[in-house]
Amino acid sequence: MDILRSVRAVAEAEGPGVVDWDRAAAAARDATDPGSIALTDAERAGYAADVRDARSRLAEVAGIEFDVPDTVEVQNRHHWIDASVGTFRRVMDPIEAAAADPGGPDGTFDVTPAKRPPAFARDLSRVANTGSMAFALGFLARNVLGQYDPLLLADEPDADHGLYFVHPNIVAVASALDVDYPRFRRWIAFHEVTHAAEFGAAPWLPEYLESRVERGVEGMVGGAGGAGRGLDPDAFAELQAAMTAVEGYAEVLMDRAFDGEYADLRAKLDERRGGGGPVRRLAQRLLGLGLKRRQYERGAAFFRHVADARGVEAAGAVWERPENLPTAGEIDDPEAWLVRVDP
Image (tube, rainbow, N blue to C red; front, side):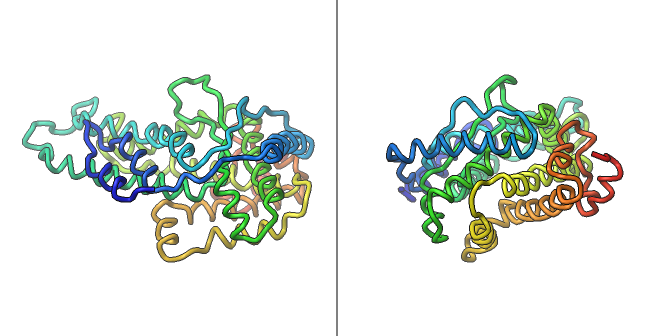
Protein backbone atom coordinates (compact mmCIF):
# COMPACT_ATOMS: atom_id res chain seq x y z
CA MET A 1 0.00 0.00 0.00
CA ASP A 2 1.44 3.36 -1.05
CA ILE A 3 -0.74 6.42 -0.42
CA LEU A 4 1.68 8.85 -2.05
CA ARG A 5 1.79 6.79 -5.22
CA SER A 6 -2.01 6.66 -5.15
CA VAL A 7 -2.23 10.44 -4.95
CA ARG A 8 0.30 10.78 -7.75
CA ALA A 9 -1.71 8.44 -9.97
CA VAL A 10 -4.80 10.60 -9.50
CA ALA A 11 -2.89 13.83 -10.08
CA GLU A 12 -1.52 12.46 -13.37
CA ALA A 13 -4.98 11.63 -14.74
CA GLU A 14 -5.12 12.35 -18.45
CA GLY A 15 -6.94 11.48 -21.64
CA PRO A 16 -10.11 12.61 -23.40
CA GLY A 17 -12.61 11.11 -20.95
CA VAL A 18 -14.09 12.47 -17.75
CA VAL A 19 -12.27 9.70 -15.83
CA ASP A 20 -8.84 8.21 -16.43
CA TRP A 21 -9.86 4.65 -15.63
CA ASP A 22 -6.39 3.14 -15.71
CA ARG A 23 -5.15 5.64 -13.14
CA ALA A 24 -8.33 5.32 -11.06
CA ALA A 25 -7.73 1.58 -10.78
CA ALA A 26 -4.01 2.09 -10.10
CA ALA A 27 -4.74 4.66 -7.39
CA ALA A 28 -7.29 2.36 -5.76
CA ARG A 29 -4.78 -0.49 -5.72
CA ASP A 30 -2.02 1.72 -4.34
CA ALA A 31 -4.27 2.87 -1.48
CA THR A 32 -5.45 -0.66 -0.62
CA ASP A 33 -3.65 -3.54 1.05
CA PRO A 34 -4.34 -6.49 -1.27
CA GLY A 35 -4.52 -9.04 1.53
CA SER A 36 -3.47 -12.66 1.26
CA ILE A 37 -5.08 -15.42 -0.77
CA ALA A 38 -2.62 -18.10 0.31
CA LEU A 39 -5.34 -20.71 0.72
CA THR A 40 -4.86 -24.05 2.37
CA ASP A 41 -6.11 -27.15 0.59
CA ALA A 42 -8.96 -27.27 3.10
CA GLU A 43 -9.97 -23.71 2.28
CA ARG A 44 -9.98 -24.38 -1.47
CA ALA A 45 -12.12 -27.44 -0.93
CA GLY A 46 -14.31 -25.44 1.44
CA TYR A 47 -15.11 -22.72 -1.10
CA ALA A 48 -15.93 -25.34 -3.74
CA ALA A 49 -18.15 -27.30 -1.37
CA ASP A 50 -19.91 -24.16 -0.15
CA VAL A 51 -20.86 -23.12 -3.69
CA ARG A 52 -21.85 -26.63 -4.73
CA ASP A 53 -23.98 -27.20 -1.63
CA ALA A 54 -25.55 -23.75 -1.90
CA ARG A 55 -26.65 -24.41 -5.47
CA SER A 56 -28.17 -27.77 -4.55
CA ARG A 57 -29.93 -26.52 -1.44
CA LEU A 58 -31.26 -23.31 -3.04
CA ALA A 59 -32.62 -25.20 -6.04
CA GLU A 60 -34.41 -27.57 -3.68
CA VAL A 61 -35.95 -24.87 -1.47
CA ALA A 62 -36.90 -22.40 -4.21
CA GLY A 63 -37.86 -24.89 -6.90
CA ILE A 64 -35.53 -23.10 -9.34
CA GLU A 65 -33.03 -24.67 -11.71
CA PHE A 66 -30.01 -22.48 -12.41
CA ASP A 67 -26.31 -22.59 -13.18
CA VAL A 68 -23.42 -21.06 -11.33
CA PRO A 69 -20.50 -19.52 -13.26
CA ASP A 70 -18.00 -21.95 -14.73
CA THR A 71 -15.24 -20.27 -12.76
CA VAL A 72 -15.58 -19.23 -9.13
CA GLU A 73 -12.84 -16.75 -8.24
CA VAL A 74 -11.30 -16.39 -4.80
CA GLN A 75 -9.78 -12.92 -4.99
CA ASN A 76 -7.69 -10.49 -3.04
CA ARG A 77 -8.73 -6.84 -2.92
CA HIS A 78 -6.66 -5.85 -5.95
CA HIS A 79 -8.24 -8.63 -7.98
CA TRP A 80 -11.67 -7.27 -7.07
CA ILE A 81 -10.69 -3.76 -8.21
CA ASP A 82 -9.46 -5.09 -11.55
CA ALA A 83 -12.62 -7.16 -12.03
CA SER A 84 -14.97 -4.31 -11.10
CA VAL A 85 -13.49 -1.25 -12.79
CA GLY A 86 -14.99 -2.39 -16.09
CA THR A 87 -18.49 -2.33 -14.60
CA PHE A 88 -17.97 1.21 -13.31
CA ARG A 89 -16.69 2.24 -16.71
CA ARG A 90 -19.62 0.72 -18.62
CA VAL A 91 -22.12 2.59 -16.45
CA MET A 92 -20.25 5.83 -17.11
CA ASP A 93 -19.97 5.31 -20.88
CA PRO A 94 -22.97 7.55 -21.77
CA ILE A 95 -21.56 10.36 -19.63
CA GLU A 96 -18.15 9.91 -21.24
CA ALA A 97 -19.77 10.04 -24.68
CA ALA A 98 -21.69 13.20 -23.81
CA ALA A 99 -18.52 14.86 -22.55
CA ALA A 100 -16.71 13.96 -25.76
CA ASP A 101 -19.59 15.33 -27.88
CA PRO A 102 -21.51 17.87 -25.79
CA GLY A 103 -23.56 18.85 -28.80
CA GLY A 104 -25.45 15.58 -28.55
CA PRO A 105 -26.91 13.64 -31.45
CA ASP A 106 -29.58 16.22 -32.23
CA GLY A 107 -27.44 19.34 -32.00
CA THR A 108 -29.47 20.80 -29.14
CA PHE A 109 -26.40 22.19 -27.36
CA ASP A 110 -24.14 25.01 -28.48
CA VAL A 111 -20.77 23.34 -28.99
CA THR A 112 -18.82 26.34 -30.20
CA PRO A 113 -15.38 26.50 -28.57
CA ALA A 114 -16.37 29.62 -26.65
CA LYS A 115 -19.11 27.68 -24.88
CA ARG A 116 -16.94 24.74 -23.86
CA PRO A 117 -15.08 24.76 -20.53
CA PRO A 118 -11.42 25.73 -20.89
CA ALA A 119 -8.89 22.93 -21.08
CA PHE A 120 -7.56 23.49 -17.55
CA ALA A 121 -11.09 23.18 -16.14
CA ARG A 122 -11.62 19.91 -17.97
CA ASP A 123 -8.27 18.65 -16.66
CA LEU A 124 -9.17 19.56 -13.08
CA SER A 125 -12.55 17.90 -13.46
CA ARG A 126 -10.90 14.74 -14.79
CA VAL A 127 -8.52 14.63 -11.81
CA ALA A 128 -11.43 15.08 -9.37
CA ASN A 129 -13.53 12.42 -11.10
CA THR A 130 -10.61 10.00 -11.22
CA GLY A 131 -9.99 10.55 -7.52
CA SER A 132 -13.66 9.94 -6.72
CA MET A 133 -13.69 6.68 -8.64
CA ALA A 134 -10.42 5.58 -7.04
CA PHE A 135 -11.90 6.26 -3.60
CA ALA A 136 -15.06 4.30 -4.42
CA LEU A 137 -13.15 1.33 -5.82
CA GLY A 138 -10.76 1.26 -2.87
CA PHE A 139 -13.46 1.57 -0.23
CA LEU A 140 -15.58 -1.17 -1.77
CA ALA A 141 -12.56 -3.43 -2.28
CA ARG A 142 -11.91 -3.25 1.46
CA ASN A 143 -15.52 -4.08 2.33
CA VAL A 144 -17.04 -6.38 -0.29
CA LEU A 145 -17.20 -9.98 0.92
CA GLY A 146 -18.56 -11.72 -2.14
CA GLN A 147 -20.18 -10.73 -5.39
CA TYR A 148 -22.30 -12.31 -8.06
CA ASP A 149 -21.60 -10.36 -11.25
CA PRO A 150 -24.18 -10.74 -14.05
CA LEU A 151 -21.89 -8.57 -16.23
CA LEU A 152 -24.48 -5.91 -16.93
CA LEU A 153 -23.76 -3.70 -19.95
CA ALA A 154 -20.99 -6.08 -21.05
CA ASP A 155 -19.59 -5.55 -24.53
CA GLU A 156 -20.06 -9.25 -25.31
CA PRO A 157 -23.73 -10.18 -24.82
CA ASP A 158 -22.84 -13.84 -24.26
CA ALA A 159 -20.15 -13.12 -21.66
CA ASP A 160 -20.26 -15.56 -18.75
CA HIS A 161 -21.41 -14.31 -15.38
CA GLY A 162 -18.97 -14.16 -12.49
CA LEU A 163 -18.87 -15.26 -8.86
CA TYR A 164 -16.19 -13.70 -6.66
CA PHE A 165 -15.18 -14.11 -3.04
CA VAL A 166 -12.82 -11.52 -1.54
CA HIS A 167 -11.01 -13.88 0.79
CA PRO A 168 -9.07 -11.34 2.92
CA ASN A 169 -12.29 -9.48 3.71
CA ILE A 170 -14.16 -12.65 4.64
CA VAL A 171 -11.37 -13.67 7.02
CA ALA A 172 -11.09 -10.17 8.51
CA VAL A 173 -14.82 -9.69 9.02
CA ALA A 174 -15.28 -13.15 10.53
CA SER A 175 -12.56 -12.25 13.03
CA ALA A 176 -13.99 -8.78 13.72
CA LEU A 177 -17.47 -10.21 14.30
CA ASP A 178 -16.04 -13.07 16.38
CA VAL A 179 -17.84 -15.75 14.38
CA ASP A 180 -16.68 -19.10 13.06
CA TYR A 181 -14.83 -18.44 9.80
CA PRO A 182 -15.88 -21.58 7.83
CA ARG A 183 -19.53 -21.06 8.78
CA PHE A 184 -19.35 -17.36 7.88
CA ARG A 185 -17.67 -18.15 4.55
CA ARG A 186 -20.40 -20.68 3.79
CA TRP A 187 -23.12 -18.16 4.63
CA ILE A 188 -21.59 -15.61 2.24
CA ALA A 189 -21.48 -18.30 -0.45
CA PHE A 190 -25.19 -19.00 0.03
CA HIS A 191 -25.96 -15.29 -0.32
CA GLU A 192 -24.05 -14.86 -3.57
CA VAL A 193 -25.30 -18.11 -5.10
CA THR A 194 -28.83 -16.92 -4.31
CA HIS A 195 -28.23 -14.01 -6.68
CA ALA A 196 -27.15 -16.50 -9.33
CA ALA A 197 -30.46 -18.30 -8.74
CA GLU A 198 -32.40 -15.08 -9.27
CA PHE A 199 -30.72 -14.25 -12.56
CA GLY A 200 -30.95 -17.88 -13.64
CA ALA A 201 -34.68 -17.92 -12.98
CA ALA A 202 -35.14 -14.59 -14.77
CA PRO A 203 -33.11 -14.53 -18.01
CA TRP A 204 -34.83 -11.24 -18.84
CA LEU A 205 -33.50 -9.53 -15.70
CA PRO A 206 -30.08 -8.33 -16.98
CA GLU A 207 -31.63 -6.59 -19.99
CA TYR A 208 -34.35 -5.10 -17.76
CA LEU A 209 -31.80 -3.62 -15.36
CA GLU A 210 -29.52 -2.45 -18.18
CA SER A 211 -32.33 -0.58 -19.90
CA ARG A 212 -33.26 1.28 -16.69
CA VAL A 213 -29.64 2.23 -16.03
CA GLU A 214 -29.23 3.46 -19.61
CA ARG A 215 -32.46 5.45 -19.54
CA GLY A 216 -31.52 7.07 -16.27
CA VAL A 217 -28.02 8.04 -17.36
CA GLU A 218 -29.22 9.25 -20.76
CA GLY A 219 -31.71 11.49 -18.98
CA MET A 220 -28.93 13.09 -16.97
CA VAL A 221 -26.70 13.76 -19.97
CA GLY A 222 -29.39 14.63 -22.48
CA GLY A 223 -29.25 11.47 -24.58
CA ALA A 224 -31.92 10.74 -27.15
CA GLY A 225 -32.74 14.42 -27.46
CA GLY A 226 -33.22 14.85 -23.72
CA ALA A 227 -30.96 17.91 -23.40
CA GLY A 228 -29.98 17.03 -19.85
CA ARG A 229 -33.50 16.81 -18.45
CA GLY A 230 -32.35 15.01 -15.30
CA LEU A 231 -32.73 11.48 -14.01
CA ASP A 232 -35.72 9.71 -15.53
CA PRO A 233 -37.97 9.23 -12.46
CA ASP A 234 -39.77 6.22 -13.93
CA ALA A 235 -36.50 4.48 -14.79
CA PHE A 236 -35.15 5.25 -11.33
CA ALA A 237 -38.29 3.95 -9.59
CA GLU A 238 -38.31 0.75 -11.66
CA LEU A 239 -34.60 0.18 -11.06
CA GLN A 240 -34.99 0.74 -7.33
CA ALA A 241 -37.96 -1.61 -7.11
CA ALA A 242 -36.15 -4.31 -9.08
CA MET A 243 -32.98 -4.07 -6.97
CA THR A 244 -35.05 -4.11 -3.79
CA ALA A 245 -36.64 -7.34 -5.03
CA VAL A 246 -33.22 -8.78 -5.90
CA GLU A 247 -31.77 -8.01 -2.47
CA GLY A 248 -34.88 -8.92 -0.49
CA TYR A 249 -35.47 -12.27 -2.18
CA ALA A 250 -31.83 -13.20 -1.61
CA GLU A 251 -32.12 -12.40 2.10
CA VAL A 252 -35.22 -14.52 2.62
CA LEU A 253 -34.26 -17.44 0.39
CA MET A 254 -30.79 -17.84 1.84
CA ASP A 255 -32.16 -17.80 5.38
CA ARG A 256 -34.56 -20.61 4.52
CA ALA A 257 -32.00 -22.59 2.56
CA PHE A 258 -28.90 -22.21 4.74
CA ASP A 259 -28.02 -25.49 6.39
CA GLY A 260 -26.66 -24.12 9.65
CA GLU A 261 -27.28 -21.63 12.42
CA TYR A 262 -27.36 -18.09 11.08
CA ALA A 263 -29.22 -15.85 13.54
CA ASP A 264 -25.99 -14.57 15.09
CA LEU A 265 -24.45 -14.03 11.64
CA ARG A 266 -27.47 -12.04 10.50
CA ALA A 267 -27.53 -9.87 13.63
CA LYS A 268 -23.82 -9.12 13.61
CA LEU A 269 -23.66 -8.42 9.88
CA ASP A 270 -26.68 -6.11 10.11
CA GLU A 271 -24.90 -4.25 12.89
CA ARG A 272 -21.79 -4.00 10.73
CA ARG A 273 -23.80 -2.57 7.82
CA GLY A 274 -25.00 0.29 9.98
CA GLY A 275 -21.91 0.76 12.11
CA GLY A 276 -18.35 1.97 11.77
CA GLY A 277 -16.63 5.24 12.48
CA PRO A 278 -17.54 8.64 11.04
CA VAL A 279 -15.33 8.22 7.95
CA ARG A 280 -16.88 4.85 7.15
CA ARG A 281 -20.40 6.19 7.67
CA LEU A 282 -19.67 9.17 5.43
CA ALA A 283 -18.30 6.87 2.73
CA GLN A 284 -21.38 4.69 2.99
CA ARG A 285 -23.63 7.70 2.50
CA LEU A 286 -21.61 9.02 -0.44
CA LEU A 287 -21.69 5.61 -2.13
CA GLY A 288 -25.38 5.04 -1.45
CA LEU A 289 -24.78 2.04 0.82
CA GLY A 290 -27.41 3.27 3.24
CA LEU A 291 -29.90 3.00 0.40
CA LYS A 292 -28.71 -0.55 -0.25
CA ARG A 293 -29.30 -1.44 3.39
CA ARG A 294 -32.83 -0.06 3.11
CA GLN A 295 -33.30 -2.23 0.01
CA TYR A 296 -32.36 -5.29 2.06
CA GLU A 297 -34.82 -4.39 4.79
CA ARG A 298 -37.82 -3.46 2.61
CA GLY A 299 -37.27 -6.32 0.19
CA ALA A 300 -36.84 -8.89 2.94
CA ALA A 301 -40.03 -7.74 4.68
CA PHE A 302 -41.94 -8.05 1.39
CA PHE A 303 -40.71 -11.57 0.63
CA ARG A 304 -41.13 -12.81 4.19
CA HIS A 305 -44.78 -11.79 4.01
CA VAL A 306 -45.26 -13.48 0.63
CA ALA A 307 -43.38 -16.64 1.64
CA ASP A 308 -45.29 -16.92 4.91
CA ALA A 309 -48.60 -16.44 3.08
CA ARG A 310 -48.05 -18.60 -0.02
CA GLY A 311 -44.68 -20.35 0.31
CA VAL A 312 -41.18 -19.75 -1.03
CA GLU A 313 -41.99 -21.02 -4.52
CA ALA A 314 -44.83 -18.48 -4.76
CA ALA A 315 -42.36 -15.74 -3.85
CA GLY A 316 -40.26 -16.88 -6.80
CA ALA A 317 -43.09 -15.87 -9.14
CA VAL A 318 -41.50 -12.41 -9.29
CA TRP A 319 -38.90 -13.87 -11.67
CA GLU A 320 -41.36 -15.36 -14.16
CA ARG A 321 -41.72 -12.13 -16.16
CA PRO A 322 -40.99 -8.41 -15.74
CA GLU A 323 -44.64 -7.60 -15.07
CA ASN A 324 -44.47 -9.70 -11.90
CA LEU A 325 -41.90 -7.46 -10.25
CA PRO A 326 -43.43 -5.56 -7.35
CA THR A 327 -43.91 -1.85 -7.75
CA ALA A 328 -42.50 0.55 -5.19
CA GLY A 329 -45.92 0.72 -3.56
CA GLU A 330 -46.38 -3.04 -3.53
CA ILE A 331 -43.06 -3.58 -1.78
CA ASP A 332 -44.58 -1.86 1.24
CA ASP A 333 -47.97 -3.52 0.63
CA PRO A 334 -47.28 -7.16 -0.29
CA GLU A 335 -50.96 -8.05 -0.08
CA ALA A 336 -51.55 -5.79 -3.09
CA TRP A 337 -48.92 -7.74 -5.03
CA LEU A 338 -50.50 -11.05 -4.00
CA VAL A 339 -53.87 -9.85 -5.28
CA ARG A 340 -52.43 -8.60 -8.58
CA VAL A 341 -50.13 -11.53 -9.40
CA ASP A 342 -51.92 -14.31 -7.49
CA PRO A 343 -48.93 -16.70 -7.48
